[in-house]
Length: 321
Image 1: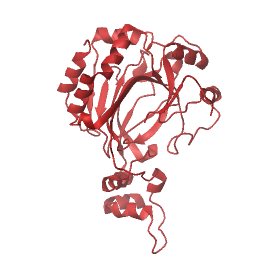
Image 2: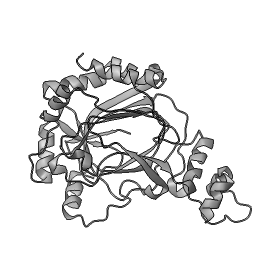
Image 3: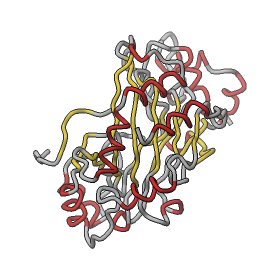
């Protein structure tokens, strides 16, 4: 298996604690492999002059539009918005977001290098390495993985991931030589002091799921700009991350190897949305509201801070969380 050394790098990687527990491996691929990947027909998609040409090229290279958080699947709506940039897409996918994009997954690799890489990503050995590093029983989870391109406008506001997700990883394989300077990278964040009560609420309600929150509730502490880098973490109440992509995707698209482990069984119910978690005016005397429940979990020091569709054959309809 020509990518065995990646498993060795995962096994020997050290955990970082800032801004939350995770692993980052830079220079993941050997130079010769990285050169082959970035030059491959499936990844090096840049000789296009319009959005329409970009979609046609991606479809020809084996990509399909997928239903993905922060995205829409209607190509016509996306093309119209992206051409005019006049329609306000706020709240189109989530009320915590101000925009939307499109995500395409490589379904049919064509080159030998990318086919081999796709097989490695699906291999039992790779899954075992990921699970073992984070102390996850591989028998208790399912796995999904793929190579994906995220177009301009893609946005997923800060969130820690839902409780069913056991592990996630992202590998930057961006073909644009200037990609590290582009505005499309993953933010890793912490809650601002005045909103840390939200994390306290999640800590105290393990049977309720977590939600996306507005950008101004958090502060970016780190960004994964490095090409050929891999970040892996097991979602917890503090693993806040998000993306807001604003860039010219005709010159090269945000491209990642992406994958998740999902618990087969998690007993959680739908949790409150971010709007429900806002601490606002006092409730009427004698009433019990979600806000009052949230307040009951908030440390006094934090309280003080707070006071001061069309069918498209190129769309995959199965939900990918």
